[in-house]
Amino acid sequence: MSGSSSSPPNMSLDRSFLSSLVERPAGVPMQMSFYPFVHDELEENAKKRASLLGYTEGFYAGKWKMHQYRRGTGGIFEVDSRCDVAYTTAQCVMRSENIGLKRLIRANVKGVAGMFYYLTMEGQDGNFYEAKAFVNLQGNTRVDLFRRAVHYPYIDPEILRNYDAPSS
Image (tube, rainbow, N blue to C red; front, side):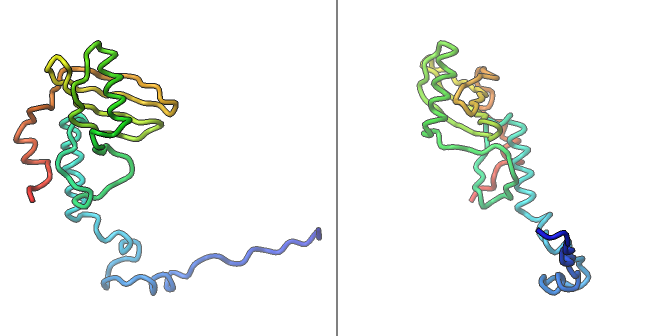
């Protein structure tokens, strides 16, 4: 190993070179050209969907399809109610409350260091229930909320009109 060190090459980028790589309308700064749709319909739909999830506490994600809104990182997303993990979590929740599970109606999920499940279920007693349960990475379940359903079968029509996906 020799005692001499060479200096690294100059890695700075020429802004005019970068500008030539990106086509943009005259007068639009270069950094803006990378985000041309910040206030478009998809962004507005994402805000409506987030409001709907807020009003329903995560229990109703609406009729939104993935192509209708801009997905950010994180968030609450609908999963198929036939999903084994969601169904098993619903069974675990209902068993902890000494109520049999008749059916899982809706399941939404939020990924964290594990998964939060927002479950809407029908019990063997004929009542509807909502539960928020956390399943950690080891598969252990913790019930954070269990109650009679507030957002099923009725959701305020005004909330749906303002925040749910437009009818196709």
